[in-house]
Length: 240
Image 1 (cartoon, rainbow, N blue to C red):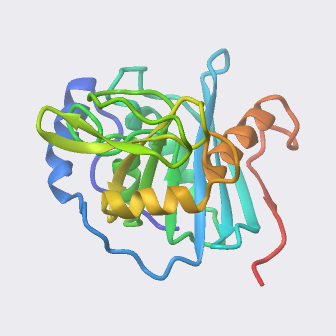
Image 2 (tube, one colour; image 1 turned 180 degrees about the vertical axis):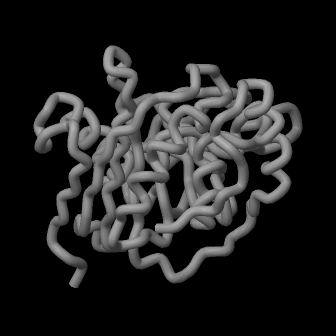
């Protein structure tokens, strides 16, 4: 997958925040999706001792959720850990992996926030805009906002608000289990984001695409995939 060159990555944290403010006006928070036949999950692990980020992407057919392809790669970390600016630390590594994907997804699920962000431009939105691809954020923890109490049954949800503005949704994916935070990334409305998250649940708290991607990069970090000094890919069965 190609990506847009919208800014430099060699920036200071102050510059990065200004880039977020400038680019957020380009976000599309209404539906502009193709027919969704492939979806992907993306996540990262970090080897701080080696100053490396391990990015992984897993692609599936949709709605069957048959795995088509998984690709990983390592990149040097060049931006400090600054809450609210994680896309400048994470997106370059993810973009290098998406560039090697052979089966481009129509929709990407990210382990992170999108519009539910202090500047309304989290990593999920940033990645979607750079790839010009619909993205949905599925975060495990709250970054910003408040919400009403949530019923305990699976499938229950309530709006996530920042003041009077709805910035995402709090979704109970399993009964009596902590919720996740669903947020628009790019080219997806909030109702559509919720619909697709529900469609890729398979009995666990975390939706399958981001859960598999998380397990994938953790396995790479443990050395279970080839020599970590070499970028590697593993193709599974092709979509029929």
